[in-house]
Length: 423
Image (cartoon, rainbow, N blue to C red; front, top):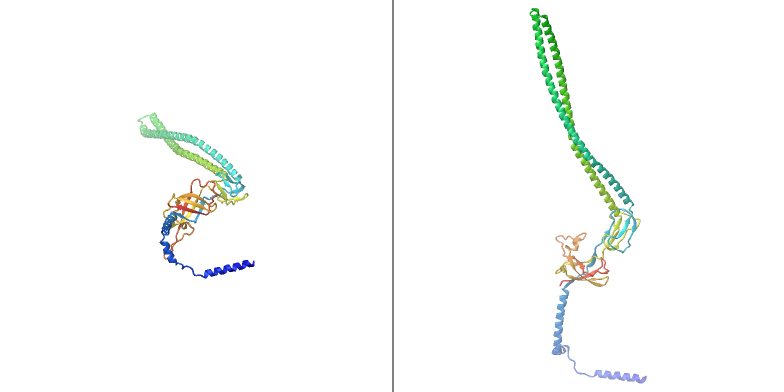
């Protein structure tokens, strides 16, 4: 062990002495560089390296300028809120949270008892309206025939009354003529009596002739009285005939209102038909309300945000759950307005989704008509004098290519990074 330590000490001393001895002079950095540059191989290597760097820069520039990407993007999709169309008591739930349902699946059932009673009442009201309409239609032809007969009868009565007036008038004129004749005969007879009285006093005629003249005068006087009575009677007959004519005309006017009565009956029949239609509509509405007691899934998708429970009284329009149709999802990417230069619908897109850590293929579907800020609750209004330019973001809709969504795990709201290939 002592010999080994002494040998190590001698070796160290020799190394130190060799280090103290002067060596050949060393060349400077610049001299070495000039010497290396004179080497053809080094020059060729530098030229090749420069070419590679330039080409790499060009390729990198072309690559990074060939696409636009953003991390302000998310998976988007339809969110279908489900609400009942009628109010009622929930008696059954046929779905669970996050369950996939097909279109037409019965999701929630509401107690149908009240709605079944409403259907029964509507059916009874419809039957009553149908019966009333039938009776109204029966009255139409009966009233029409009766009205026609009344008009014909009233017209005949008017004609008869007018004939009666004509006849009574003629009899009245005849009676007046007879009265005039009787008065003329009576005047002559009375004159003969006065004249025969003077002659009989002078005994120019016989007493018999005088007595005959007196009898004739008395007879003609009685005839005048009878003729006057006949005129009065004939005048009363004219008045009675005129009264009958007036009554017949009144009856005719009443009968002429029969067509209006027929129209009124027809209107009532039409109103009864309208009532039947209204009752039919009420029945259909009641039947629809009965079907609405079963809340049906309008689309296929996954049940989410369920808030309804059995035994709850729900109101029409109250949101009970949400269905997310996973077969129809897309990407909403908010690109800066300066990044939209050269972006067009139909361009290919590579979509990296963080959750499955996978790339999907898609294409640009459309570009929104306004910036996202314009659709906010309180859009910014930049007044003159304090305007600050802020780069806006425009929503771009990106859809997945066919076949990319088979068995996917994408959900609306997931973050993603789309890369739009401009060329």
